[in-house]
Image (tube, helix red, strand yellow):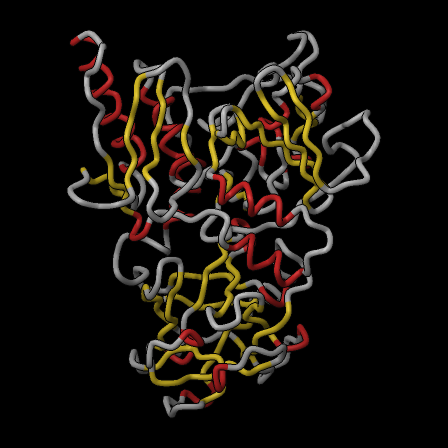
Amino acid sequence: MKSKLLLLSGCLVLALNSCRSDIENAQADSMDQTTTKLDNAKIHKLLINGNYTYVNEVNGEYFYADDITISSEQFDKLKMQANSEMSTAEKSTIVSSFIKTWPNATVYYTLPSQGSMSTQNYNTFLTNINKAFDMISSQTSVQFVQRTNQTEYITFTYTTSNSSPLGWQKNRVNGIKIYNITYPAIIAHEVMHSMGIMHEQCRPDRDQYIIVDVNKATEGSRHNFNLYNDYAGHGAFDFGSVMMYQSTDFAIDPSQPVMTKLDGSTFTKQRTGLSAGDYAGINHLYGPVNASSAINGTYTMTTALANDKNLDISGSSTTDGTSIILYSASTGNNQRFTFSKSDHGYYTIKSILDPAKVLTVKANGTTNGTAVELRTNSNTDSQKWLLFNLGNNGFGFAPKNAPSLRLEVKNGLTTNLTPIVIGTTDQTVQPSTKQRFILTKVN
């Protein structure tokens, strides 16, 4: 999404707060979590990383927004994030497991039954579901495949509202509810929620582009304007995104919009198709982590500290135990890597010099400052890396054997021969600059 809110097994980004952040007249709660009742709903208000997140609970179902549902397990993870007594390391691990994308960029589905629908409406529904799939897959690596015996898949129901579960979850069927059966882009919008994509107005950098005043929103609708720190905005903020709401949505008084641009002007939404930004965002979320068994092509891993310094295999050696260092960018194979799937969300990082050798945490270490080296792939957890899709800020990496630590340039130095190690992250959301890397496809 030139913007889109992305989350890939923990696509994390730091919230950019300013005086334009959500305006709340109520005094700050002394507790991290409060619950109030509104009609038949419970409104859960959670303080997470300095921002309020609202979740509406209706008849045991948790709504992250009016059209987004989360599981009880996901809700529990949010509550743990709001626990101020929990350590940074614990929160970091929780955030990384909140939501996941579909394995192999393949979304399995079943088509709805006709039920009480007229034949004409049913055929319209089927036609527009397929148009929504085509709309998404036409310019992305995502595939929609009709289910045979898969445990996780999406299904559709014609009902009185539009909603979808958020992201992929093991052993869960994502039941998508659709009312607007004549609008393929609205169906695509809900399918994209099931793919792990949030509303554009909720991206963590939104305060740089819009003013959001939740006091102007109707009671019980504030969850539609949550600021999601555990997402990443990719590209510029996209007012034309199919995932973007308009200024007056959920407003108490349409003459007093909930959202405006920074200059006070209003904006409308579109539901005719995906924007160029939507496509770019999906491809960033599902590619380079795409449908093949390995990430397509060969990549350099450039530190965010300096755009002319890459991860490098010391001396171009392929001997087990060779150090991984930072070095001036070159075109040599000592700085080129491929990524192959291991467990869901985890990848081995292979050297082009010898595909049997992968980036490995030395001696399966789990302490701050442990070196990263090249070693024969033996499928250990110290050789599996969880990719954090940081949107505009590239990627972060966590070793499976030490999920609260991050791949980093030691001490944040940019001099040649600086060791690459695993280190403590001092934030639960976006890693520090020394722990961010830009993947650049070189062939």
